[in-house]
Length: 194
Ligand code: G4P
Ligand code: NA
Ligand code: NA
Image 1: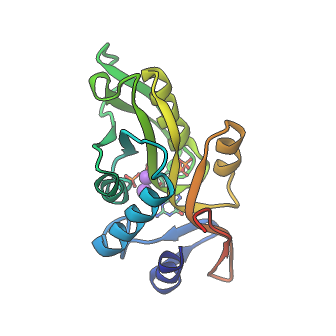
Image 2: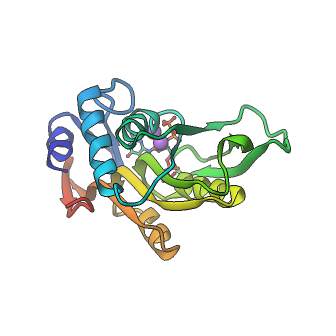
């Protein structure tokens, strides 16, 4: 998505070896016009898929996911990072390990919000090692819901999340794919929405 790649070139900041800071339009300050364009693009890609719900994980997935839900005219459900690990029969629940933060967290969605008859489009802001994505897939599996595919705003293609998802047969739509960072600059690979 050209608009997004241009914005990453303008406002993105490469931190160290493998982190892209995008706090001027996605992860802290949010550009609603860009988020709406992103949502409309995801909705166009999945227009024929008969999606019944959009699912993401708090916090930074919510903005692009909400505009996707609006464009598809379906509800948005976001997984919550649990404050404790108390199991409860009313919850879909799984553990997600973050390589960035080096800690495991429990992510949960209320069982009543995802039904067996649902067809889910998963949206997230970043795809790195794919742990959050795999966690959301696990929650959908627990609910018995079908997954139409996964829409990612920014994929770091040099990390292994993409490979893990494709191995599971998941349809992946990454609007910006970062092949690598070169001297603090971003070099893109061909995006999935073209
Ligand atoms: P993974 O889920 O793909 O395995 O990613 P990882 O554990 O490495 O990422 C943990 C968190 O860091 C996720 O947010 C993810 O979106 C974010 N992240 C990963 N790579 C980057 C990056 O290059 N830049 C930025 N800005 N974020 C990145 P989170 O902490 O779970 O959620 P949130 O509350 O911040 O949205
Ligand atoms: Na994030
Ligand atoms: Na996220």
